[in-house]
Image (cartoon, rainbow, N blue to C red; front, side, top):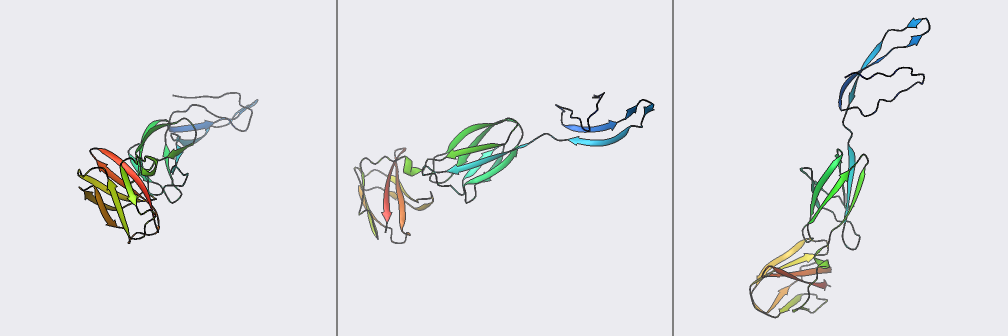
Length: 207
């Protein structure tokens, strides 16, 4: 297909809505006394891409490093600032974001002729607190933490640090269990008890 512009008096001209591909451009000057030879050059018109920036944070607005972002068949990982980027064509995209200790995020975004910044808040286990029927003591704790619950059915217990990393895991089939946390660094931790496909989460502070 040939596109032609005539009567151009400016020093530049824009051809709009070109499909991606390789084009030969030709320019001929026309004078009252005649015209010049056609000067040609090859031009490759690429499909435009736009940068999508993911900014992933927790409920406290702190960045989440190491979160996996899967979009358009590619898996990215957020940096220390909770940021990762990808270049995409115009279109609609589904994405999934995962990080240990946080709920999975499933969402979509649209690229429409401009860069996109996608701000994502991941809710961690600290945001899904179901504290009924579970007691932790002492709290704060220095060495031995006691977990008390209302039954002795089999359960899986996981302990997470404040950044979502699981630091300890074990099974519990008693109503009361004492565990050592002396090896943990000082800070905030979360005990997650998984029982009968439900989870109960409690927070404790390690001195």
